Image (cartoon, rainbow, N blue to C red; front, side):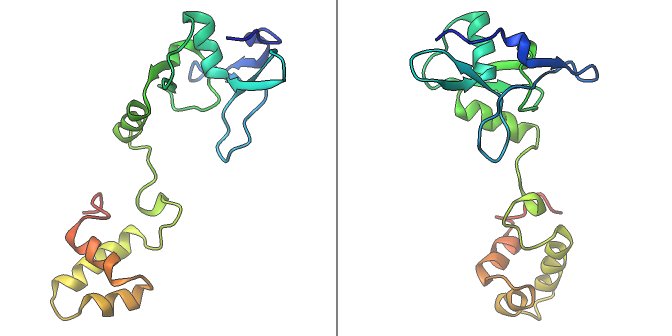
Length: 157
């Protein structure tokens, strides 16, 4: 790992309620903020702060290995809250903790859980078809089919 310009502790503040060490340094430019550390190696560049903390404690990380957060706080760089894993491990952890965006929390969701319950009830009566229900809710018939067959919105009773 290239040398870091300043000690990692310079960029952190403790969060007393959770035990997290919150990053107050640079952040990446993506939609969700993740801590980055400037490194001094030829051209200025940044690496993930959690990765830098892990490498400073345990040495180099294998290619394709992520540093994941047990606490699910992207700005946390507390070593005790970090663990190495693959992309699949990280996704499995997210699903296990029910942190994935599904249902109404999904960015492109057009229905609510209450509407899904209504749709299933309407279809169960047998009086209305997929197209009629879809038109009423402003979605495609295949969306209604997925709801009725429980291939989508499975988490709604």
